[in-house]
Image (cartoon, helix red, strand yellow):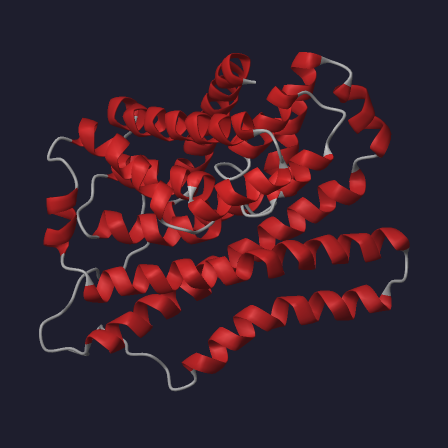
Length: 324
């Protein structure tokens, strides 16, 4: 019987470079053939989202491969409480100390599940890491100078949302909704750990990179298609402004390290609405939904993203009403 385990092709570095560069090159060539301003704007936004997220996707897939190859499963068993209901808030709080964005969190969460971490805890980490890590909180403080309450509100609302979603998965989640990508997890005796690291890194990056580009294209389409007058109409209503910025965060797909500056520029909206933008965006956006669908399956992505968006909006409104 032939060995079903396939090693890395000799051209794997070239494949990684092509996955990173080829989509952008194609978009540039297409954009040059069409000189309409709308097409140029679409090309700019699409490339900006892709280029902005790509370094963090590389970071996440590298971290995922390192966890898979070098970190024993016993480490997670020691760090997390035995009961999943207590492991959820601990995993959510772990996001405070690990820099990364939403693109990085998906492959890391997938690797954690493969190493025996309860899915509820992995999902709490998936949501909290891009929203409350030190880089994001520092960027928020810089974007809102003299407003430490905005940083605190973002931290609290994001942590509560992550914990609630983890507990909600424990309560209502079903295994048939979750279909992780089929891959070996953990170290195989007798094999090089560096080889296993390269295999995991290659698989996750090539798999997630395509979905990242699809999400970036969808975000660019919204940016070009929605007129400015529509934005101005929603800013005049307190409740509609919250819902509008929540939807805007989903479709703009701004990286969490940069979304605070976008929120700060939306001066016509209320502080609670801008908080909602910063809480919803790192947890639910088009490129993240695409990454989740590619990694865990469409059934999971649709249900989990919809529930996360609702919980994030509710938590943002409550926390914003108290702190802002």
